Structure formats: C-alpha cells, structure tokens
Image 1 (cartoon, rainbow, N blue to C red):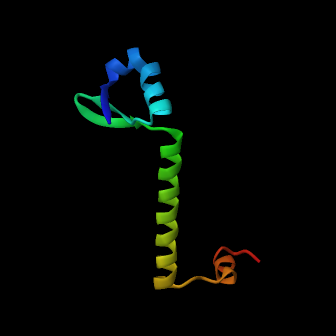
Image 2: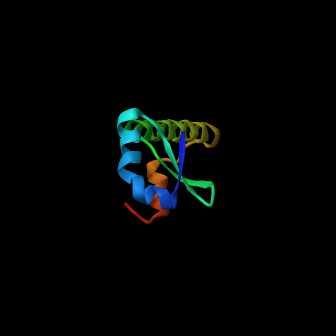
Image 3: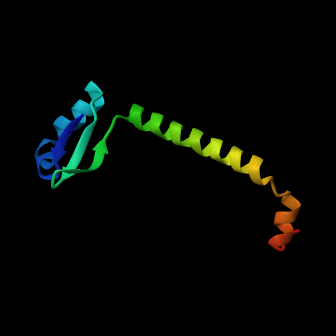
Length: 82
C-alpha cells in the first residue's frame, strides 16, 4: 500500500486513481502522517461490502436464534395497526 499526504494527492490524483483502478493498488490518504481515508478499487469495495453484509446476516441470525422472533401481528398491535 502506498501512503500519500493530502496536499500531495491534490497534485497527483489522476496518477493515484490509475494505480488503484489499473494496478490494483490501495492508496492511503494521510493527514499529518496518519491515515485518514483510502482509495480502493471498485472490486475491493464490493468485496468489503459483501463481507459486511455477510457479517450482518450472521449477527442477525444469531440474535434471532438467541432472542427468538416477534410475530408480525404483535408488532402491528404494538404500533396500533390492523
């Protein structure tokens, strides 16, 4: 991974985007030497989002198993719906 300062990225954004899009590199954007954001390829972003979705689904299934579910009729009654 390459780390680039915020001031430097202003002058070299096109180059950084090319590295990310075509060379598969990840670029860390740094402020005062500390990483604050990253440029990643769309492929990497989609993979990250898929992993997050899978983790959320796993957590939801675990919570449902541990706590049980609430019938739709009970939810409607609580909300004053028919």
